[in-house]
Image (cartoon, rainbow, N blue to C red; front, side, top):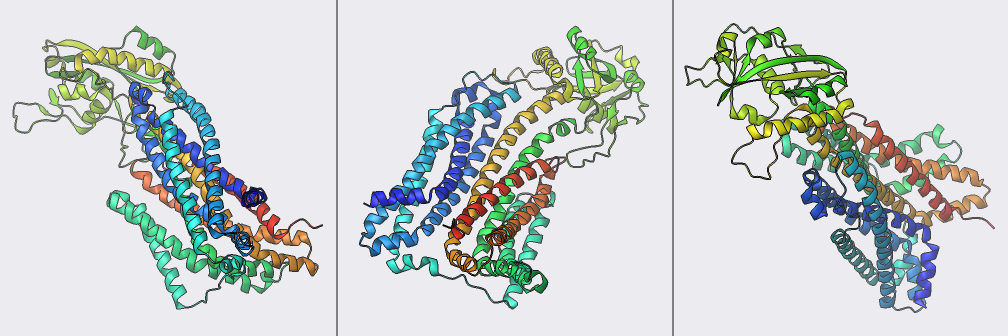
Amino acid sequence: MLLKLSLSSMRKMMKDYLVLLVGLVVSISIFYMFQTLAMNSDYVKANSMIRSIGIVFNVGAFLLAFITIFYIFYANSFLLALRRKELGMYMVLGAKKARISQMLFGETLLMGIVSLVIGSLVGIALSSGIGQLLMSLLDISTEGYFPFYVPSLLMTWGFFLVLFLLTSTINAIRLARATELDLIRADQQNDQVKAKGIGTIVVAILGILLVTFGYYLLTHLREYVAPGFIVGAIVTTIGTYLVFISLLPVFVQILKNNKKLNDRQLNAFTFAQLRFRVNNLTKILGTVAMLIALGVGAMAGGMAFQQNVELVASIGRGYDVTLQDPDHEDFQALATMQVLEQNEYRYKKDGKTIYYLKDDLLAHPPLISANTMESYSPENSLKRASQPLTEKAYIMYRDEDDKQQPKELPEEWSQAISREFMSSYQMERSHDVQVVDPSIYNQVKGSEHKVVLVKLDEFVKYKEQLKAMDARQKELLKPEYMDKDADKDEEFSLETKYSVYEQAYVFTSGTLFMGFFLGVAFLSMMASCLMFKILSGATRDKDRYSMLRKIGVRKEMLVGSIYKELFIVFIFPAVIGLLHVLIGMEMFSIILLEPYKNIWIPTSIFVVIYALYYLITVRLYRGIVLPKEA
């Protein structure tokens, strides 16, 4: 009998269960995808690029797991709250509490298993499609990559089954501790209206001060580093809760006291509803605001990293291409590009020193950039190295104790050679670098070489040609500059602009994918929590709406009141959460040159997801308080 009642109840509450199911499926599928991208052991070992971003997906899985724990416990407590009166009636009619607890345990576990099955299937599809897309963007072979990966599946099922067992047990225990009277009268408990006073003012001021202090720390991480981030995040979170607890009820009361606004249409009823509801919503609204900040921040941060790749590769550089002893294929590739400037510089090498010919440098002074990661401005334009070279010989990084060494090379020329002329740090590390006039240069017995510097009209337009150039440069330079004692598996790395771009692109591609899907998961789950909180009080509002209908209030006006009331509830955490994002993104300025680049994209994605949940919540709430009339 209880089984039939359970199935009947689940069918009746199918809309509520679907909301929970969607949130769980999103979380499970993304968790599985992250694990698959990070745990394909043979594939990861064979691809250094994937190996370098595996940690990104592991971090994403950890963050997602942490938030999912909160979501599952809260969502299941919501479902229990919706059914308290029904379960109390079963007890009054003679059902044993132990049997009802078993029924609730089974329902919760069944929902978890169904969501695991669907989420795993969606996760496998995501791992296939997103994995293929990621490999395509990174130009990596997909051979050996398996979207259906048993270790990832076991990890996902193990983690979520433990969570579902815990939530099922806790719900059963909570039900066992409640009396029949508590359950039956659950819907009759009234929201409390807190009195205003000096305490509210103190809490509001403290909340604003904490949020302001948190903003200050997060926007000055260069000075405060890790402690600033930790303290800033904590005080901003606490301040947010205090602001919602103190100021939100006051704002609603201000709306209620505005006679002109209050007397318009059904605003008196709408504001009264908010006034009685708002104190029970402050904590969940504060939570939603913080998780909106995390969700949009994750997407904005991941996208900002990706958008800043070219800027990072260009930092401190005046040229796009550095070629040591270019061959015929290199010049053929250059012929397909729009070259703005191309300079050639000769140098000789003996056993321990590289000698650059001073006349070539003076004939074609190289471009240098004033930008660094610590001090960047798009207004900084390139300039030519112009410091005079009056000595016959100069050396970079002069040893002050060695009086026989030439004079120190001026800073501008040293910067140009270090950043533009050197294709690999091994070149600079393994040789001294001198700039000499022809009389000294001609006496050097070493082999003569040349380096070609090229500035292009647009760097990213020629990625394929630049990639091929870098590959040829590696083959040319590795035998001479690779450490003889280095491990055989150790890779010879270049420090060219394209090489830096590629390394940053690989890492930020992983960050982009992780941030986007993490953000979607956070926003889906947290908007669901707000929806659950609103719907859990809907049954108490049903009688008020029914009374208004009986005295002749048109249904369209009541529907408009619902839209208005829930819009005010939804808009507060959205505004505060987005404000946190706009301020908080400044903390990325210590590692990103333009942290706000294209921030409108994640903001737009958030607005769409949040608006969708708002409309769904209105529809579900309306179905409870304004059922179809016969």
